[in-house]
Length: 155
Image (cartoon, rainbow, N blue to C red; front, top):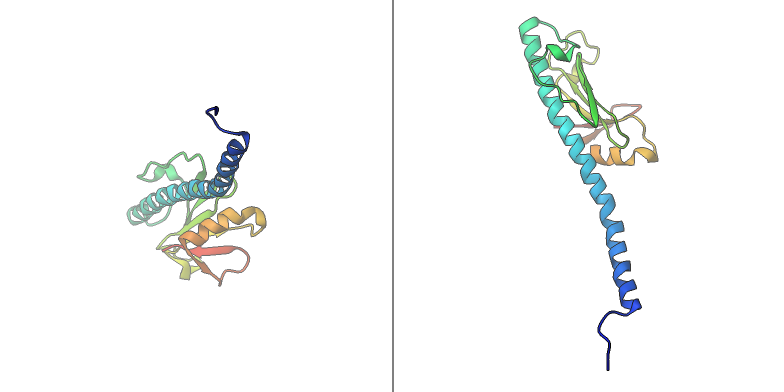
């Protein structure tokens, strides 16, 4: 007469397989979450820079006060935003890149060849910023003309 059920070995094999699958899937899940947070910031920063350009057309200059723009600046959990001749989304949490969008009409800027350009930036190129570097590589092309940091041109 046989008993119904699983042996201890069978249960251990199933647990081992689940553990291996989780070890493979978890880093990909974390990267997907960080990429979605960055995409959310890119969308908000695009709206902010468009409002900044509209402000420039109406007033002849850019503003650093985001409350003067005709856009609702999101209170992001992951990024905070600031503007002037360049608009930034700076991460509040680790493993996220800095997003830098240059205005199209920033006259007098020493970096006039950057007008209208958008970058994904990694300030700290250490192993601890590998996730931010991976995100930038997935959304842009590396700009090797920049010296200190890693910049990736977003199109």
